[in-house]
Image 1 (cartoon, rainbow, N blue to C red):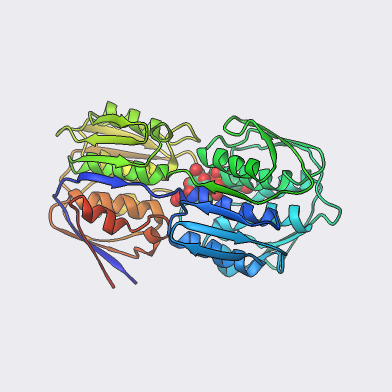
Image 2 (image 1 turned 45 degrees about the horizontal axis):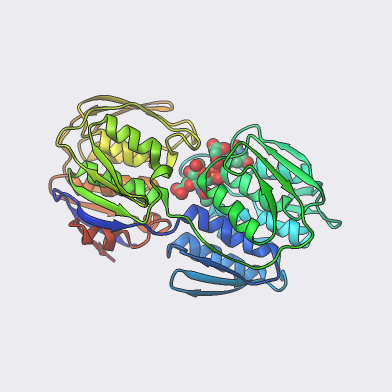
Amino acid sequence: MDKFVITGGTPLQGEIAISGSKNSALPALAGALLTDKPVTLKRIPRVRDIRTMQRLLVDIGAKVEAQGETFQLHTARIVCPEAPYELVKTMRASSLVLGPLVARSGRARVSLPGGCAIGSRPINLHIFGLEQLGASIHQSHGYIEAEAPDGLRGAVIDFDRITVTGTEDLMMAAVLAKGETILRNAAREPEVVDLAELLARMGAQIEGAGTSTIRIQGVELLGGAEHTIIPDRIEAGTFAIGAAITNGDLTITGCQPDHVGALVSKLQLAGVDVTQPGPNSLRVRGAGRLRSVDMTTEEYPGFATDLQAQYMALMTQAEGIAIITETIFENRFMHAQELVRMGANIRLDGKQAIVAGPRELTGAGVIASDLRASASLVLAALMARGETVIDRVYHIDRGYEKIEAKLARVGAKIRRVE
Ligand code: EPU
């Protein structure tokens, strides 16, 4: 298993470019199953979750040609409408093929995800929505089987809580359903909007993506399309916090600043200098001293849960007490104890982490427990005194493209050891 060895203390300085969004690319790849025509997707990040999705699509029957960041997908026929346990357990987003498979072939068999490091993460809302669209659902041997031999029919689906991949999955199911579907209390994340744009290019009729009510008029067939994935807002946010925590001066290029608005507000309140030198860039400069600022995770446009761990690392360096409240996942504080091993003062109380700072962090051996927790440990290590060894960095490889190379180019002392 690979490790990162990081020597802290160097401010991040220079320009760092953002890759395509993992969480946008995953549903887009699944969306390509909806048509028997070729779909070209550009700016796909080269991360492990994408390779997992690629394997899944090939097993289902897609031909996938990847050249750098451009993927060409062609699913002339669905050969095996199934997402097996061994893939779903490594990547929950595999359940994104459920909607497209039922819509295209009238049948899907998808493993139920088991437990997860950050919370229970069930897919009951995906299943509920498919039932509303007329699919019959059976559960056995750890699998969900959905069938709609005569096709899906439009319905009103009221989500009782906001789900990002649930919204995406049902949007993909509804585009080929007969009649109108209305998704209420839908997720408003930029990744949902990006998927709607791809589907519209394929011929789908969707209105309201980016708001909490999405209206879809089903069509009989979808065609091929070419689409470029949006920049990864979580990667951009991670590097912005990296600049702030190392007291550096980083220009983040190829990003969409309005997608990280909630983070930018918090950084500015904490005393970090954030400016927008161009429409697709952000400049983040540390201001020496940081103030503690409370933060609560929320669905978009609120503060992203996927940046909570990184923000907690930053607050260990801020003056005062910051209360961080996690409202999306019930167990997303695994990084806190590792940060404490490095010297942080953090107390956990249910959904809240109480962070008192500033505390000097010193390098230590730590273990990455999930993707964003790993990113938080990398950021803490970049500012800590001495050497930190982060074990299990395969978690970070799931969602950050060449993070050590990108960080090394802006001054970080980071190397991967096998
Ligand atoms: N939920 C249910 N039932 C469902 C679906 C969700 O109870 O059927 C609950 C979840 O347990 C959670 C909440 O609803 O408490 C929100 O979960 P959501 O479904 O929105 O999460 P997701 O779609 O599985 C995506 C991202 C996550 C990100 C969350 C929240 C992808 C592939 N994944 O997950 O990204 O944290 O939305 O924004 O888009 C990551 O990239 O590190 C990551 C975990």
